[in-house]
Length: 253
Image (cartoon, rainbow, N blue to C red):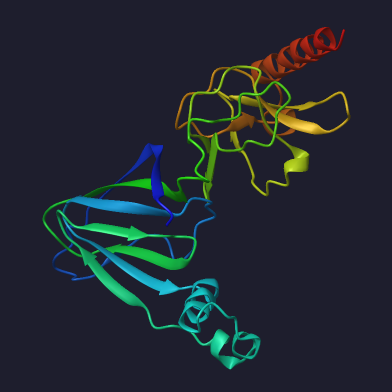
C-alpha cells in the first residue's frame, strides 16, 4: 500500500470582483477560456463571499487519461487517433457560492470564470497543492539553494502570468539556466527588478537573483536600455554582473 502526502505551496491567490449591473442581467466575464501552464497537481478555491461561476471543459490530455483508466490502463491508439479525440466536450457550469470549495487542475481543464449580477462582491482565495506518494515526496522547502544552480527547481512556480518564488531566495542565487529549457518570459520592471541575466564561466546564460527575493514575488528583470533609454537600473545591473563575475573567479581559484 502507498500512503500519499499532500504538500501546499506557501502562496495564496486572492481574487476580488464585483458586478452590480443587476438591470442588465449580464455576467461579468473574466479571461477567455484557457488553461494554465502549471506543474503542481491542482488548486483549491474557497469562495469567501458572493458567487463566482466556473465554466470547465476537459482537455484532450485529460480525456485520454480518463479513457485509459476506463480501459484498465491500456491506451487504445486507434481511439486516441480517431475522431473521438477531436470531439469538443460539453462545458460544465458550476456556481461557487459563499462557503463552497472547488478543487481543479487548471492545466487539465479549460476554464473561464464569470460573475453574475449580485449585490455582494465576489471574494475568493486559492492555494496550489501537490499530491505525492510519501516515499517519493520531496519537501517543498527544498528550494534552489545550491551555488552551482543545480536541477532542483522546486523554489519556482509558474503560471501563464509569469514565474514566481515559492520561498525566499538569497541574492546571488542562480534561479535557472538557459539549459533548463524553461519556456517563460520574465516580467520587466523599470523601478525594482530582482533578477539579472548573466553569462557563466561555461558560456551559458543564467538568471540570477540580484537582491533578496521574497516569497510570492514574480521574477522580473530590468527594462532594457533600448526600451527605456538606459538609466540607474542599467548601472545596477552592470555593477551586479561585475560583482557576480568576481565572486565566480574567486570561487574558481
